Length: 128
Image 1 (cartoon, rainbow, N blue to C red):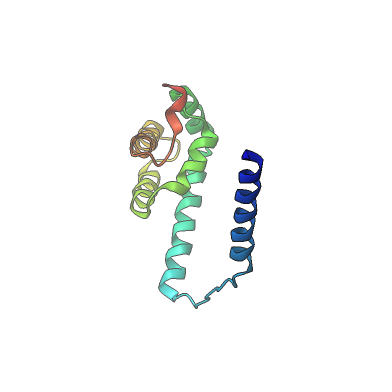
Image 2: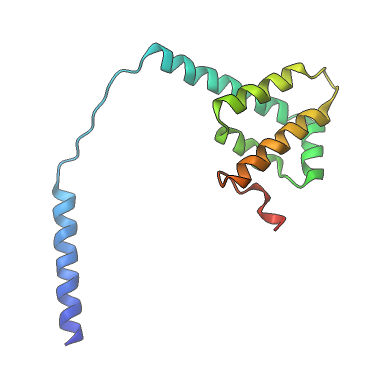
C-alpha cells in the first residue's frame, strides 16, 4: 500500500514538474541609462583602487597578524556599499606613500567587523 502511495506521489510530482518546465519563459531587455553605467564603472574603479591598497605587502602582513585572510578581505570588498567603498578609497588616498598603514588596516578591520556583525559576511568565523 505504501509503494502504491509513493508511486502516485512521484507521478504527481513529475507531472507538475513537466508542466512547469513546459511553460514559456519571458525575458525583458531594456537599455540602461548613462548614469547607471557611470555608477557601475565608478564602483568598479573604487573596488580596484581598494583592492590595490589591500594587495600591498605591509597591509597583507598586518591583515594576517589580525587574523584576517587577505584573500577573504579582497573578496569582501565587493560586498561593501558604495558609500563604504568611497570612504575606504578616500582613506587610502589620504595615506602617505609607505606611511600610516595601520590607519588603513584599522578602517578595513572596522568595515569587515561591521559587515560580519550585520550578517553580510562571515570573515571572523574562525575566531568563534
